[in-house]
Length: 413
Image (cartoon, rainbow, N blue to C red; front, side, top):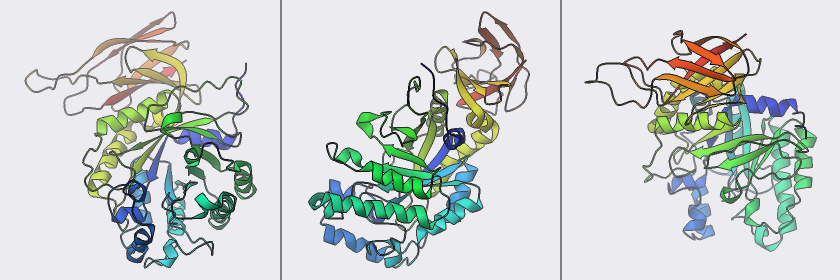
C-alpha cells in the first residue's frame, strides 16, 4: 500500500517542529488549573463574576510572541475559549461572556494575531467544543452546536489568515452526533488551508478522526510512529505537553520540568516526525512568570545551535542503541545524528559522571557519508561505514558545555 501525497499546508505545519501552547482564561485568576470550575463544583453564577475582575492589564501579546520566537517556536496555539465558556475574542453578539465585555474591554485575539504576524509566527486557535457555561450544551445540544459553529465562523472570518483550529472536548460526549462535517465545512469555506486538529484526549492518543482532520494528537505522552500506508489522507502528528502538571496556571504547582526533559521530549517528537506543542499558563491578568520564560530561554539556546535539525530533519529509519537516532534533511543532502547523555571531557575531579562517549553505531544508513561534524562547534568526527551501518567516534562534550542531546551533521555524497 502506498503513502498518500501530503497537502502542502500540512507539510508546512510538519516542518515547524515546535509550537507554544497558551492556556489562559478566567480560571487563571483562581490559580488552581483550568478545570477548577468543574473539579471543585463551583457555582456558575459565582464563577462568572470573575469576568468583573478580568482586566488583562498584564497581557502583552508582543512580548509573548517574542518569547515564543526566542524559544525557537514557529507557531502559537492560544485558548480562544476553554471549557469554562469564556471567550478571549469578540463573539459579535453571540453572548456577552467575552473579553470585550469585561474591564479589559479589548479583543485579545486581535492583539494575539497581530503580534504573531509581526514576528513571523503562525497563529493557531484552540477552541473548546465542551462548554460548562452554556446551558444548551446539556439541554439543547443541536442549538449548542449551531452556537459553536457560529463561534468558529467568527474566528475564521475576522482575523485574516490563520494557521488552524485546535478543538478539544468531543470526548465528553462520545456517543453524540457533533455534526463535525458542518463545523469543518465552515472552516474550509473561510480558511481552506487551515490545519484542523481535534484532540482525541489522554485515552485515545494518536487516533484518526474525521477525514477533514489534518493531524493526530498525543496529549501528555510520547508520540508513536505514524504508519500512513493505506491512509485516505496524509496526516501530521503533534504532542502537547505542559511545563508542569497543569495547563492553566497552578500557583501551587511546583513540579516544573527540567530543560533536559523539555529538550529530550522535543527530540523524541521529531524522532517520529511529530511536532512538539509546549504549554505555558499565564497568571491572572496575562503575565508570563519569569520561571516559565527562563525555561523557554534555555530551550531557545539549544535551538539556536541545533534547530536546523529539528525543523529540517525527517524520520528515515536510522537508529542506534538507546534513544540515539538519525533524521534526514528535507533536501536529502544531510543526516542529523542525535546523541543523548554524552559525557563531558575533563578532569575526573570536576566532571559530572557521563553516560557515554566514544564510537557509536547507527543502523539503516543507506547513503554514503563524506563527513561528520558536531553542529555546535564544527568539530570534525572520525567515522567508518559499511553494510548500512555508520560508526562515529563521538567525542565527549567540552568542559563548560553540557547538552541533554547533542547533534552531529553528516554530509551525504
